[in-house]
Length: 155
Image 1 (cartoon, rainbow, N blue to C red):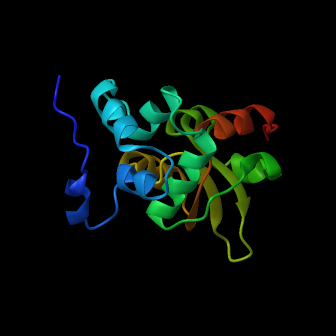
Image 2 (image 1 turned 135 degrees about the horizontal axis):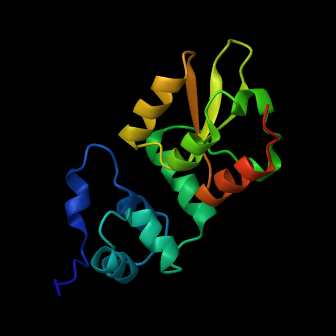
């Protein structure tokens, strides 16, 4: 087992604030909870996923912080009607895999897409391969994206 990093000063040198640092600053987690999540993170699991799994943060709070970290809007997806024609821009299987749901078109011709992880480079490559219009990212909770796909009628 590794020693605890209770000071977390290693975040101070980061160009973009790291998720753990933001969660600490906002009081969503304690240093001890962050240390435990870092120690118990499964291979391939993102820190946020670990924090939610351990019950240290709510998924909605995590989504809001991820949106802030990436500098994109947070979208309360259950409160939004998903345009089925927008959703049809991405095959459902791909959208569920990428944890991304096209929500609506903008008047300028862009496509608003709710994503669970706006920092995922594979997500952006996958979306760019499918969508040929400007993409406007919003962040929503992953479970809301999954349920959004289930409640959106297919075209």
